[in-house]
Length: 372
Ligand code: IPM
Ligand code: MG
Image (cartoon, rainbow, N blue to C red):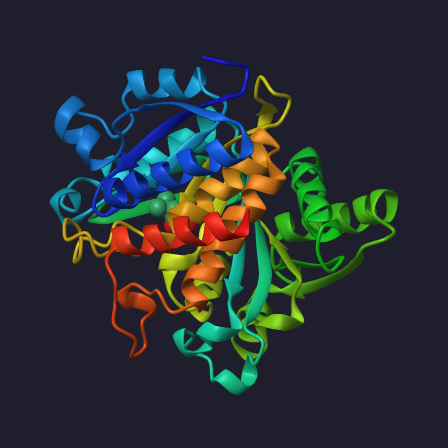
């Protein structure tokens, strides 16, 4: 392999994962030809398919491949076949959470982008979002109530059980994600809204004070505001573009980013990046890149899923883990050209004839040819 090869792990997973991954790799290969890099990827099982083949959603061999890579391109995991397993063993939880922990993937970046041509896709009235939506959610991903200890259920007898989750944050965890929010805002509208529940939660009181101090020290150029999470959920539905960068802790981010996803129309268009605390061999953040939508079991295997979110996730991988900003921009531009030019899968067709996965990817490839 030449020095220009990108070494990444490909984990297609379940449902539509393998289908959209397949065309994404073709798009990446073509972008590589144009921008002078080769792909050096290896595929491995994750999620339900890994449970079936290896007895666990995240086999050690998959973890090892990820450790030997500079980034992970992830499809999606889960499906009805595995829903009867205990929650802890289900593909989503048993694959994603350990991956986040293993690679300290503390920074989840979800762009909430809705093209003005696609405002019909949003459940919000078009007059509320005449220019579409362009915000980004930065979610802390390895702390808070997801991972805090103790986390357990105790049988108290008499038919009574007691379950506890622990929400915990440290100053350093808040500061490192605050830096990601700052970096993101600097490349955009320079405004960050930090979301917490400081009227009730200790962790939020700490969050708010650490964020305030950190921004004062490190980011005088960024406009910082604070909002309680209940209000943020309401404001997001009322006027999403009042936000530039929405910045929050793990569980609030889980909920708000799904809300953002739905108001941005199809989940088939939404990419995400989860950046690690460690740099890869290129001195860039190691990261996991995945579409925000799920495995879509209802349409899996038919070759009709929207591949755009997976393609856009690959663009984020080029940008963050490989520093290939121009190539990432080219992909994002090509997806936009293809979709706004009228090539649409069923989820975003709105009266236009719907194309299949392969045709959608072909339109992206074609847009790439004319753009670069
Ligand atoms: C997400 C998902 C996960 C989460 C689940 C599948 C564990 O909802 O990535 O947002 O809660 O973080
Ligand atoms: Mg979620």
